[in-house]
Length: 96
Image (cartoon, rainbow, N blue to C red; front, side, top):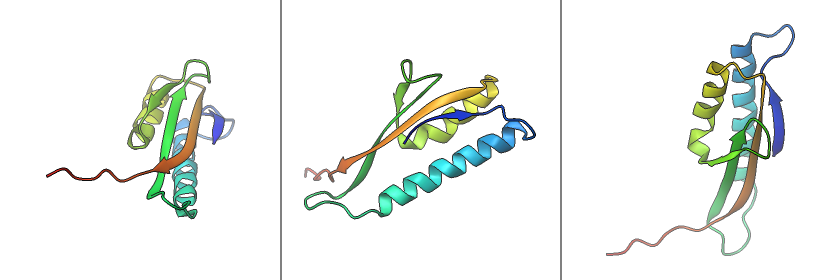
């Protein structure tokens, strides 16, 4: 997913719009995680970037997405860019 989301939308409060964006992101992550993994891959991992636009987007972890979106709402941004790309993930072996 590479998308520019609008926070300021006519006839919708910014807080409700942010809730709807968070829900869309959650649905997308769930849909991607349910896809079957190729042989030798343990799970789907994600590369995430967020910012005002694609050129200045910074890398974040998937657990930080909701917090970053909330910060953008508090900073009174009108829109933001979010990129979530699935990649193969491998479990780390525990060392004894």
